[in-house]
Length: 395
Length: 113
Image (cartoon, rainbow over all chains, first blue to last red; front, top):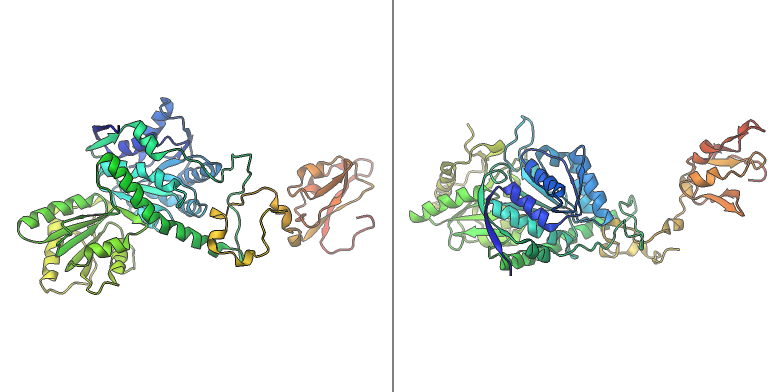
């Protein structure tokens, strides 16, 4: 029988716990704030003999992802973690891991990118990786960070998918705050994830293979990209199915998106990560005042659940998309662009406005959420939707 | 020979290729003629050669052909002209030079090679 223990812990510790339970073979890791406690915990588990992984102390994140690719091609289950500049340093390897179809699982503590130097939360790092071919999951809470990490291994290694997965949580807010969470017993997680049996393993001397080959001019590069695209498209139902299986075991809801009050919402905020709680708090307040407010949280960003989002927003009058990262020079932030695009084919489209918020950990207060809902109520009441990009709360 | 029928490779659809550009069998590089990009070729003077077979050991493309423990020539379909054999070929003191040297591709070769 599945047995869960209630703990008071941080997102990072719970991600490390999930990775320990997944029992990876190789952990190539390099510390960076605010991810460090994940790799510290994993190093401790290895030192204590609680997992039998090969822990590789590398000299940079570039090397961490290179080692992860090598180990995964060799046939190992590989887990690692990074953040911000570290993720940026992995950039070329992220594409390689996905193109080679290696089921690596990596945690990212979402953090701003320099300059100026800043170690606090925003989504600039992870949104920069959105086109690398990785599956990307976002967590609102430490509990979600744990659950996302558990299912990441199943998704990555699923024979219809075989793609790397990034499981993420907001730096400091979720990675370092003590939160209440339920942790599943080791045996149940081990059984849920199962063993990884690689089809093409470099260490399988009985059937030698070559990884990392060439497909240049006149070669099938284009076709390989098509099959990579097919794989991430196929991952959508797989993620839903695996999330549903995990949900049945742990008793917590788990969807690609999570709506609050969306059944009859007239004004709604679309948001990713830890800010969903703030939005929900204010939406609840407004409901008491008779405002039909809703929140749509996106938990899986790649693949992007466009149809589900369009379905959830189709009856809404005014929608605010909150982006915790910039796409400088674009019409708005990445979540805004994709959400707005998802709504294009609807017969009656809601008004959609964009807010950039919380960059570099700048405070996301309830008053800011009230202001957004206030703007939305004006628009829903017949006011014009501003096309101006708002830096929410910036002086 | 590859166990794959590659005759219609140019018609393969995306999902027919092995996942992630993996080559799921060993040794099929023999099917690909890679000697075409050679700009210099190794020339071996059989008189100077001591049959030490260092060239056979160091050739990265197994393009040094050996029969009855004797170096007999090169596999020109796969020698890419890297020059490792010429570089490693030891000086024969009797002649004061080594047996293998690199010559421009296309130049006329002496008898015997």
